[in-house]
Image (cartoon, rainbow, N blue to C red):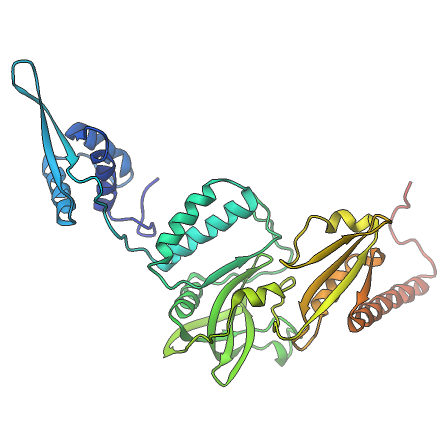
Length: 378
């Protein structure tokens, strides 16, 4: 595969130096021919037609400029004549040192690590963890991935219309979050009448704290401004424009992303200071859909004598529509779940279920009991 400027290590000489470094660490070193073969295999796609002695000498000089001690060891035949020249490190403890990477490269390694670890279960996640640890020490990267609904091999298509953030918007969001700079965004809310003013894009300046993935959707978590420190979440694919500003902000000492995520359910992040225990009782028919799943790190699940299960979640009830997201999820199970607590959620679900039933009853009466197009169970 051809190397491009978007690769982490895209400079042709860097590719060659990596190959040479491996060869010089072999027991007994390597000849010029062996080094040439390794270099050509490393930089395939960079249009390297030949690897001359002069280029090899420049590459060896580059390694020595970096502090490497390279020696030449000649082999002799029985007649005392020189045969082959081997190159090797005089000090095997020397390393090539730090390699400059971009923030996007670090993010790609982190994402690969999480996907492999959570969804594929491969041991390579340990190698990616070490790589990420080394790279993270060079950058102040503040990102968390939290999702439990992505497919382990392929990313399933989403049923909703999705505006994907452009590369330019991602770059600005990432730069502002990493460097603790204010971020000016043009944002379209995801709730309200698309033809009304409630969904009209607005311009605002936010303080970005963290980038989070919730159920396959990316969000920016932060505060509206220094005057309004309450936590907000902004769906990144709803950001129409973004610009990292020169203004810096200080991340609050009490901000801990894990505290927020511990009380997060679905795609809603609320205040961890305003939480309530949600207790749900599922009938045995729905048990296979609940048992074995992790909805929250500190959830409680209890098996019932009748084959059902009782699930307790710690959910934030802050925001303009408290527990609305939980109610919508509960309603998806129909009569196979009963809300035990809190009472406000129980009333919300009951009210929505009653309103839905009335809609269908009115339609049934209007059609005078006509066929609904569904086949009866055999």
